[in-house]
Amino acid sequence: MKRIVVLASGRGSNLQAVLDAAAAEGWAARVVAVLSDRPGAGALAIARAHGAQALLVDRKAHASRAGFDAALAAAVDALAPDLVVLAGFMHILDAGFVQRHAGRMLNVHPSLLPAFPGLHTHRRALAAGCKLAGATVHFVTPELDAGPIVIQAAVPVRADDTEATLAARVLGKEHAIYPRAVRWFVDDELRIEQGIVRHRRGEPQWLF
Ligand code: GRF
Image (cartoon, rainbow, N blue to C red; front, side):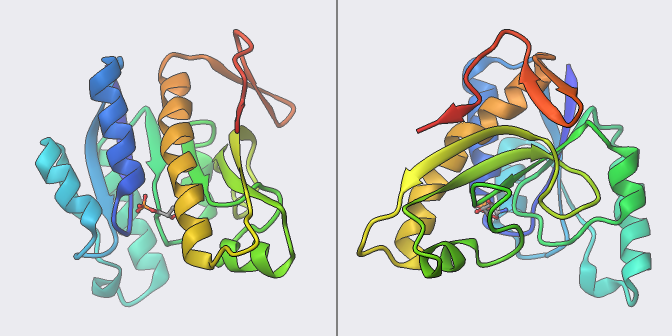
């Protein structure tokens, strides 16, 4: 059984999607713990409901960024994860942490990377007049939202879209592609060749 640790700051809908898929499909892995930097994170309640450890490393309890980073790293290392899954974790991880988990840490980002890394992706896609938007699951590297792409999903941008309607459409796709990507990792289906992620059996790494 592979050990998955999820880091999440917010409501936890991607966490829920991963938990649901793992249970429904009988993965050879389990979410052993969910760790949050915010005490009120919905993701912690979801973890408890699922019987996974719900751990808090409170950003506000640490005066310095370095202190928080050290506490976070110690908490994650103690869990001995095979895979770290970032699911709306709103803290930029320090390079040492990222390097220690290189090739074993995934993130979901609500844009078609490399377009719109960082925050406010939907607002920026609307302002740019994009006709397609989407979501990306990628391996995490020290550069923000720039690691090797595992799978992407695209959605249309409608003329009357607001940030909220576009975000909801994209989120639905996140819930489809994130569990798929995590399962591929669990089943050792992914390899990275010169920064390009390939599925060993050639499954489509996109979704419309
Ligand atoms: C998602 O849109 C994800 O792409 C971004 O943060 C949001 C997290 O949502 N990184 P949730 O907490 O999984 O519902």
